[in-house]
Image 1 (cartoon, rainbow, N blue to C red):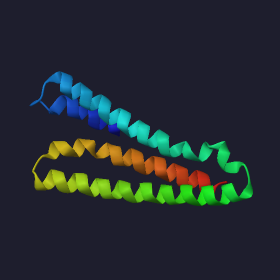
Image 2: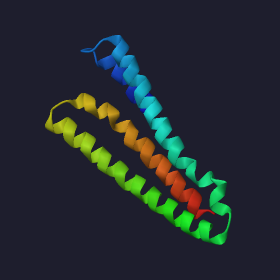
Image 3: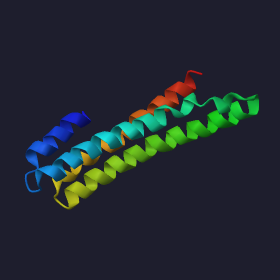
Length: 116
């Protein structure tokens, strides 16, 4: 999905030069994948499993962090849409891929912690 939005950005955003469009394409894709990767790999940390207290508290903290990530992704989606509509700059909707990466990574973290 983010690759399609990025390619559409390069094709249809003609008011800026080609170099800036390609940097936007790279920024959207890197941002999406880094947010997803960051959240999805947090449950793989082995220091949380050293003793039962760390496992219980660490798991609870990571679950709260996952919920925070999910809530923040919805807030960011709302902010992107509201800003694009109010300023009548629909180009800003191309950045909506970043909150989806945040949501998917936080949701994967939540499901990994539920399956432990």
